[in-house]
Image: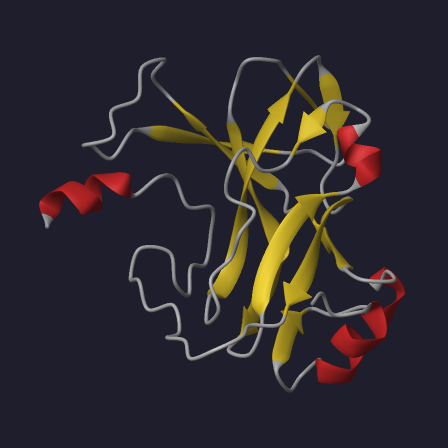
Length: 173
């Protein structure tokens, strides 16, 4: 079952942490998250799963930045989120999607126990101008049934910034 916006609000600062939290961003069954002012892009056209791929930072100026198609941009939310009681899920807002801007390619599913900033996998189908601090996506929460373990991976837990793929660590086991 998905939590309603009223339930999200009721659990803020208890079972659900969203920092900073603004009540005006609560929706009927989700909460809008905003885009930080920085992006990460991979330096090479060919990426290797077994290596840490080189990246460069791009600052999104207040006057906006045009994203180009066929390029992956990694961004992050301004908000830190955490919950040990619900399964967090991330989706683009419909207004964002209607511009042909996708904010997660595959990683919209969070693990119960995840704590940190959400890295956004941003891709567009045509050039689109973006701005820092825009409400770009929404988080919603599912109940979980049965016994469970909390997310404990060291790869992305308690991150502070944009996280490139750390898949190469899977090959080191």
